Amino acid sequence: MKQLWSFIRKEFHHIFRDRTTVMILLLMPVIQIILFGFALSTEVKDTKVVVIANTNDDATQRIIDRIDASEYFDVVIMAHNSGEINAAFRDGKAKLAMVFEDHFSENLKHTGTAHIQLIADATDPNAATSFMFYASNIINNFQQDISQPQSGSGMIQPEVKMLYNPQMISAFNFVPGVLGMIMILICAMMTSIAIVREKEMGTMEILLVSPMKPIYTILSKIAPYFVLSVINFITIMLLSVFVLKVPIVGSFVSLFAVSLLYIFVALSLGLLISTLTSSQLAAMMISGMGLMIPVMLLSGMIFPVENMPAFLRFISNFVPARWYIDAVKTIMIKGLSITAVLKDIGVLVLMGTVLVTISLKKFKVRLE
Amino acid sequence: METVIKVENLTKRFGSFTAVDNISFEVKKGEIFGFLGANGAGKTTAMRMLCGLSLPTEGKGTVAGYDIYTQPELVKKSIGYMSQKFSMYEDLKVWENLELFGGIYGMSDEIIKIKTDELMASLNFEEERDKLVKSLPLGFKQKLAFSVSIFHTPKVVFLDEPTGGVDPITRRRFWEMIYDATARGITVFVTTHYMDEAEYCDRVSIMVDGRIEALDSPKNLKATYKAKNMDEVFQQLARKSKRKAD
Figure (cartoon, each protein chain N blue to C red):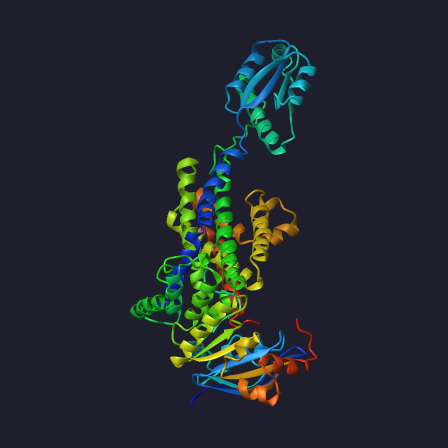
């Protein structure tokens, strides 16, 4: 026990004497959350709209008012011909154009049909899809308000309800994603680097000659990063609840338990990387390329797993973050109990056990 | 005299390459045993087998009375080791390194404290005690590394080219520390390729191509090979080498 304790103390010294690294490790979640929360927001807000309405009649005006009043749109230009629309798109002054046909109101009253053309700047397809959806919704609502219920002709009115995230706030999606990424980064990358550093510095040789038990070496390498991960987990939770207003709907205890499990998987992954490499650079490359990219792209953090081609969907099964992010979404956002994520837990337990077994076997007690 | 290291027909092969070829020798308690050889002659491999860092392919060996195959944990407790690479923790303070290695070898806090005080006084290190190791000059670091390797009073200490890259005066001082250690009953097993250092050893073995070509006291070796100094002895033997130095 004394061996272990002296060694853990040493590991904390290593980390906390390296001020830059500590700062990076502790600030990284804060920066990522702020970045994703404010800069990389996929929500559509105040999209600039250019309108052509040559006959400024009652119905036209009411639709324009509704569009302008919604938080998604700002009507900025009243144009008179298509040239002005082109100019507005080109100069980035507008993202959406609404073209009302002439005699809009009259046509609506007399023939029952009137046309509005919606033109979107689709350079950002996701945003275009979202604001097109909002604009059509506003027009549909208007339509329903003016149309009198007529007996005989049936009318189907879809009532759309966005469950768990009614305002479609993207933070609900990326908070679990950032959690999944930060934990992998800190646990796997930093642990592997810390172990490989001893090999590179030659101190591993001294440790192998000493009666220090290899399992103690491993445990004490892991301990500080475990503590750091827990601190980061709490930071992210505080930020998401108080700054991004993403509530923890489900039980915090379940969420924490799943996170501990994920940390364990990430740590064993780091351990495995450290047994496979002998230079810090290689360890960094493997964890950077081999972990970061799959976590970003294949975990469902940015692209939904369901939309991937079958091959990538298959690969994504081996990305621990995928299961963790799913579990976090289920507990934190949907508010379901831990029994709803038993599959995720099972997969993570399996991954952790396999990784730990392989890396303990591979952890070299001798030099060659 | 008590035998501290006993090696019989020890062999290490890496694939078809025989790094250490059937070597046998004994080292007595309190002896300074020099292990000489050109680069690539197999010194380091042989030493690593004795320290439990590498498993022999064939042969027998005991260190401090423990078998290197079956009792590696007991061997590890009774030896000290200093590698060619400087290998203290640079971002720890001098006393923290001592405390760490004391802890690893299971020494109690009181003993660590007493021994640290003693050591700092004898090395005139009082001022450096609280400094980070990386701020010390190389000569200091090497003294510290040696002190750490014998901090837990091992029966044998293995020194792998301990004086590489240091000036002659510092090397001379370093050897004074080695003599002090033997005076306290610690056996010293040292590899080197400085021939003046070979003269300081009680007995010297010279390895050529994985085999021990000569083993005797420096005085007898010089007489046998009719040489003025150890360098000439070494040159005569090393000429037989067929291996390319790496």
